[in-house]
Image (cartoon, rainbow, N blue to C red; front, side):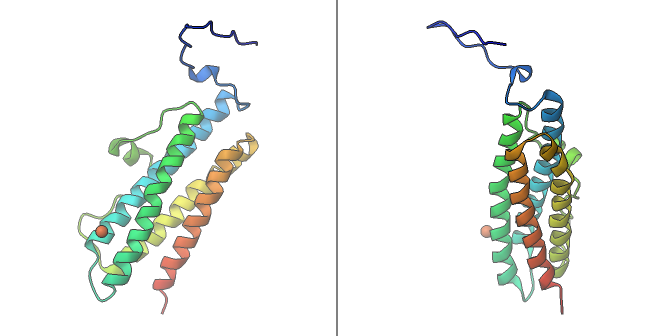
Length: 174
Ligand SMILES: [Fe+2]
């Protein structure tokens, strides 16, 4: 269908989701946006837990973990934006409230009482592994829909989560 050119001076009507024509059908865009919403909620929850542990870590490894957690929460904080904006590019609203994130996340909120340092590390290993599973689980969806930007984003996030899980896991070994 040919689109009418807007006459000079006429406001272009806002595009509705159904008018998006990027070569990915609405059903696929909706399913991918749904998957990305889970990834966004997981990433945000893991960000907050990591920042919490940066604040509350104690013990002989304080300096190492305080610094390491800062690098990790900074990376996670930076990562949420491209995930949310990919959801928007697919024509859907990005979730952005604690209630939505709580409902969508596959990982638990941080414990109310700060755990001991190595327990924090163990919780973060599990968190990074869980986010990796969320990203990997939706990869076939993006791949089959020919959604290369989402597949690329998922690949980048998988690389970070698997590498961070390895580094944290190494702290738990004798
Ligand atoms: Fe700080």
